[in-house]
Image: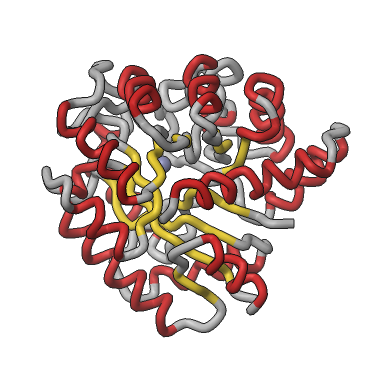
Length: 317
Ligand SMILES: [Zn+2]
């Protein structure tokens, strides 16, 4: 069964920070989207992270940086884990729409508009609910032209609805849980999920404690979010973006980042000093739990990887 993890949060600062990818590989993950930047950092940090990640993947056996879905098939056949990159927030574009193709050429296959707080492209989920800016609209058109998947996770409500309105390609929420089950600003409303499905896209459930429940990373609760979406938008539109993030090898520096940039994570929304997340080994448990709840094999396969693969095949060029 193909296991596609639509997002993992890395904070790549040194040459071996990707060594923890072995955790996903050991868990049987076939494809992982590795974050190379987010709005908390500068655009130059993103370029540096890309250089370090590309270098590590080039010199390390067992992993393959992929350009297309056919490369994922080749990686699986060779016993390798396939990797592509994502960016969380368009500060990384430094105000230039030209940067979309530049990042695409370097392996970025998915990008979201604004990481929790508003930026030049649009709104973040913990900020005033502004829509897409003129620049954000330009970026949507460019991402469609280039073949980069538009991601609405972390973004404000209006920005997501407007992006899904104007995108010609399927749009995803790479890692966004259901607000109906857990009332948190990072989780999304039913109409956002329905609109995503209407574009042909996928909503990915994550394993982050405060988004699953109250500091809840249990397989059963994660499966509850998956099941909620299965009922709401159907088996063709649900996936997983687990967002395992404490495994970057420099967990301490991520804690520093958190404490030094707490406006990105308002205390009202993140009362706990530590945020826990489900581990990649839970992919297998999630599959078992879905089967135990009598979901068909076809549905389990679609959720674990088939749906995101379909979107990639349709959007990546
Ligand atoms: Zn994220």
